[in-house]
Image 1 (tube, rainbow, N blue to C red):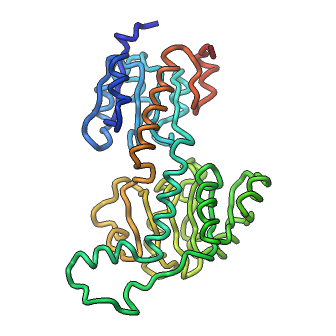
Image 2: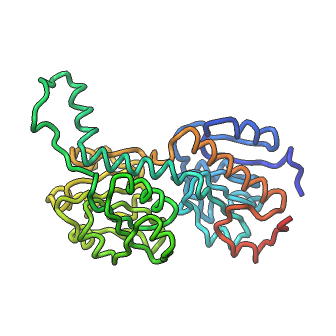
Image 3: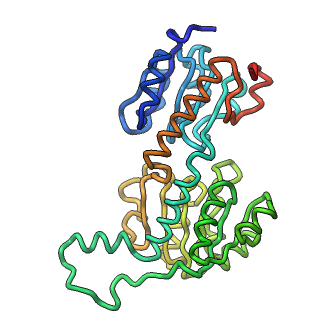
Length: 336
């Protein structure tokens, strides 16, 4: 095994907390201090001779990038819960282990999801922008009229960890909870007062629809024109999962033609959105720059988890959060 002092690591984005400083005590670490995704050209330059990459949203790591390491790359450890930024098939073929950070951001993303829902329903961001103009003339009974959240029907599309956490918060708002998922857990459904519905039924009956599915080939544009047409004209769409899960063109049309009332968006397709994206000019859209996991506590835990995964792989151990499990058939590691 290469000695730790000579093992090269590339970190695609600087991180909060002290975890990276501790990593630098163990390995030869290069960090990108620019606060945006690195280009493919830069990735190819920086990964030469590296044993591990700690990656983030927007870092597109495909077979060409992996090969640019010269065969030294052993691990791509995402400091995010998603892994659609990595070509898993290419990684597995090359014996490269890919990991993510599940669970640690569940509560933080659920908080933000509910914040989006409240903000778009009650015109909070529009009212904030207005009062800062200095033109508010005083209270009025018709100003910034919104829609209640309490007691309404919430449809949760994708009932994983985050979906359950959102459901738990919705209980405090006495919401009727519908969900759609390919998997069922009757015990947990009962615990959270959840009712299973087909996707079409959920869309037709919900006042708020929140998306919590991973970005996979089968979930790309999962919500498009047909699905948006099924929603109530008074309904809101909330997306804090991945931008391409929703067909953005169809969402723009649905909002412009008032087929739905509004949307709360933390994710985009592509990211960042272009400045002339019509969604950014709509008062019935709350637009955020992919900050669902952006709390100091959670982001610090995410980078620490990514580092723990990386260290396990480099020490010949199976990492706690392995995504491409078939890689163990290509390049086995000891579990001890």
